[in-house]
Structure formats: structure tokens, C-alpha cells
Image (cartoon, rainbow over all chains, first blue to last red; front, side, top):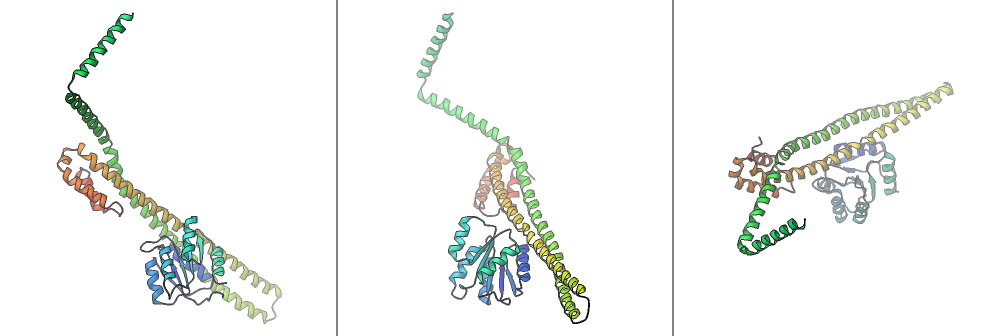
Length: 126
Length: 216
């Protein structure tokens, strides 16, 4: 199923510059319904309060890490089907394995290009 | 020539006999005294490091501030560039839409096909520039990596500061007489220092420890 350009997307990153970059790329890819959160806990609160179609999350964040957010999403009956794309500088195999085991939909390593992000989104929503 | 050697050997034998004759308590006492002198000398030698340690300890908070400023400045600079890129992207989107409408309008009139072709070329060029703008945007993700490295450095510096302050507390009393009277308080502060080991240390505590050892 192709990605719905009107779906609400949550961009989670503690760095304001990264949130802006990811939102810009998503906007250029045709997605305009974009929200943001600074950490996993804030993201979880937003996800529970509204309906989101996609989550793009960083790994290293204060308060609640991206991997813990992913586990919380997969453990929640209402949220568990939301695709989650991890965008992270954690390029070690162990991190990737941990994310895969936690149910990540795909994984982008920083620094990345717009093409890589588009490719991953296409794979998630094919 | 063999005579002096024989004499020395004989003197050694006498010394050994004297050693054996000493009471075990006296021998132990002498060894303890020697050990105490050795520890004292070592402590004094180590306390000579106090000056450079103190200098480093005083500079560490400054180093952390410089690093955090670096993070803030790169973040602000990155946002400034992003603001300009986004403004150009918005302009491009409007120009692109206008070009599309103009091309459609021109196609319905009897203009030269070459002019229509030029309009298409303009649209393609604009698209190529949009791609470059997006590349500039993603290239700015370097700031996130810089920030993460800075955060790691600040954590390392924080740990080093803890260790250096521990040295100041332990060896500081050798440096100033005033510090000797504050040894009890220093021990208490050392405990507080240990308690904050895994958290960001309160600067007030660090300053208070330094103050106790005469660094204002």
C-alpha cells in the first residue's frame, strides 16, 4: 500500500536541526502533515493522544531513548501497527539487531541522503 | 690484595650477627618507620602535582562551557542556513507553479515551439536546483553528529573533573595548613563527590571543594 501523503507523521529527535532536516525531506517527498517530539516520552504521549500513520525516530535521546519508544509502541495494542523508521548515528551491528528484534520497520544511518530516506519509506509502504 | 676482601666479608658477618641479635619488635618498629617515611615522601611527591591538578580542575568547567558554546553556535548557524534554504525552496515552489501555468497557457497560443522548449528547460533547471537545496539540507545533519560528539566529550570531561577533584581532596591537605583543619569537611565533600559520580556534578559543590583548598 503506497504511503498516504495526508497521513500524520511524527518526527522524534532531541536535536532541533535533525527534526527540521527530516521534516524538510518529508515535505519535499510530498508529506505535509508533520508533527514533532523531542524525546520518546513526549512522542508516546502524542501518539496516544492522536492518530499517526508513521513515526521517524532518533535512537539517542534524553528521557526516553528511541529503542524504548519503539518497544513501547510495539507493546501498545492501539499503536503497535504504526511503521517506525529509526534514523540514527548508532551504526553498530548490535544496535541494528536490537532494533530489528524490537520490531523496527526500517533503519537509516546518519548521515543520510534524501534518496536513502525515500527508498526506506517506499520499502515500508510498498 | 685478598686481605681487604676478607676483612669486608668478616665485617658483613658481624653486621648480620648484630641484625639477628636485635629484638624482633625493634626490627619491626624500624621497618614500620621506614615505611612511614616512604609513604610520607610519596605523599609529598604526589602533593607536588597539586598545582597542575588544581589548574586543570579550574579550567575544566571552562572547557565544558566552550564545548557547549560550540554546540549552540553550530546549532544556531545551521538553523540560519536552513532558514535561507527553506525560503529558496518556497520561492522555487511558487516559480515552478507559475512556469507550469505559463507553459500550459503558451501551448494554447501560437508561440514558437522553441519558446515552449525553453520553458521546459527552465522547469528542469529549477528541479535540479531543488535537488541541490535538499542536498544542502541533508548535509547540515553534520551538526547533529558534532553535537553528539560534544556531548560525549562533556561527559568525559565531567568524569575527569570528578577524578581531579578527588585528588585535590586527598592530597590538598599537604599543600595548605588551613586545609588540615578542614579535613573532616573535605571527607564529607569527597563523599558528596562520590554520590554525584554518575550525575552531572553541581558546580557549587565543585567550587566549594576548590574553595576549601584555597582556590578562589
